[in-house]
Image (tube, rainbow, N blue to C red; front, side, top):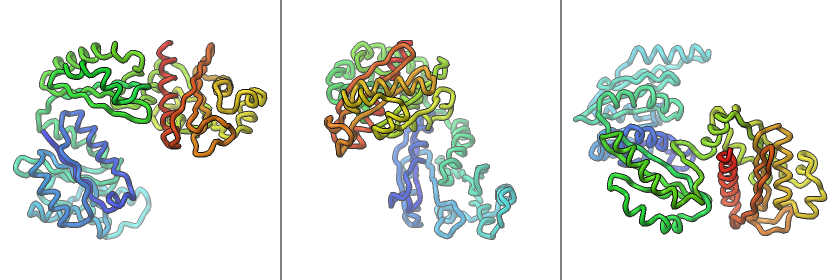
Length: 414
């Protein structure tokens, strides 16, 4: 069974906003065994929307439309849907009451244009939006399901998870789908593919392998789909068991709908351990990556960004003698930073980064792209020196990812 996503809005096409809705929808539909056939972004234009709807109906069983449901004149989705289904708009009393309650709660004047949010196609089933004024709409035609949802991400997500997915699961029988994502670090995509080529060629036909490279790490995603859940899970595990001995030197862990930093956070929380961070060249990226995940307060004690050499001395108490002797970008300084920040926050683990992200060398004469990363525990401190090239964003991204992999290796030792 296949689905197609249509996103409506000039703001997407001109790059004013990023289409995160489609990424979310892709993940949610994948979980229930529905493949996304195509994602289409269209203008706030009636003819363009009608064309996209027609093509989607030919391609897919489920069509999800997001955007264009606001109260202003440029939001034309409802009127266009009526034209496509030869329908008319009618007022839905429950939606009107929801709109009135929202405006009353916020003590805002309820305008006529706001009341028009309660107008829905007569052939549609209303999906009540408890987080906004624009309702979702479910329409069926020739065995196909069309669902129109507001474009506001948190409103759309709630409607999908709480109403659309349950409704679809009750209506259709979906196959079981499973993904197993293996995280590796330290070997490029082509070299990795050559190393595991024989294993890859022997995979059963119903299992697909995807290489997902990103800033120094490669994720290997095994995907399988079938009607028998036990058969799918057993075969995936069998193939993982065959693969791991071939990549044990670069294996970091697993990622199932989570980033490595989310996995680390879960591991630390389950262990009852804590983390602190001192970042120079990564400028807060490591900390931000951890705290972007809900529940990070259970393990993340805090961090500092002593970007300047002076800050490393004053905030972390790094000896000026060590800096003068070894350079501010050195294993010695990285280890001192990690040790100091762990003590400062009284944490179980600590990460530190110091380096030259470029394009200039800053306070050190070491080559641009050089990064020193250290991991400190209550008993040990380890460090490594890397060169991540000359592109600034690439250096920061690869350093952040490497810090995650180094930390996880230390966690797994525990």
